[in-house]
Each structure stands twice: as structure tokens, then as C-alpha cells.
Image (cartoon, rainbow, N blue to C red; front, side, top):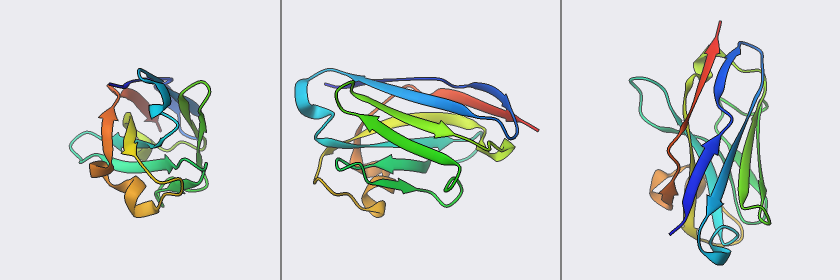
Length: 131
């Protein structure tokens, strides 16, 4: 069983930056054989896809964050990161890291953006952007 632990959230002014990290612990090659994603959930709203990265390093982004957020992964360190620049008040949410089931080397947007693709989640980290 893989456990995911997020860190890096906090309070930032609009226009600022934060870097979220998610570290996976647990069995062997599971991390490198999976795609990873970041989702977010604002108060009173459903959890939504923000960014994903497949096994090849291919990246996928929601339109709302494209050009501002960058997802990356380090398989040796079992870490996935989300660099968030140009933050807006609308980015305020709890951010969750997720790991998909063992998957193909190349992913698709539909696969990475679907919560049903994921079998492990972190506990979430709060990001608050003030205006």
C-alpha cells in the first residue's frame, strides 16, 4: 500500500507563488509505474483536476491553471511537485495528490483528469490566496 503525504501549502498574496510536494512511501516500483496528479477542492465545490503527469513525464493541465502551474516528478525520490505561480484568490482550495493504478507509459488528459483513475490519495494541503 502506498501512502502519499503532501506539503508546501500556506497563505500567499495574489500574484505570489507556492510549491507543493507529495512524497510516496511504500512498495517498490509502484510510484514509477503510475501516473500522478494534483486535484483541488474549494469550499462548497467538488474536487477538480488541476494537473497530471504520466510515466513518460508528459504533463496535462486544467485550462484554469495552464501557463501558471507546472507539475514535475522525480521517480528516484518518489516525489511529485506542483509549482504554482501567479496565484489568484480562485486558486484557494485544499490540494490533493493522487496516484493512479499501474498504467501505460503514455497517458491521456481524460485518464489523468478522472478521479476514478486514482487508487491512492494524500490527506491534502491547504492553499489560501488573499486578494
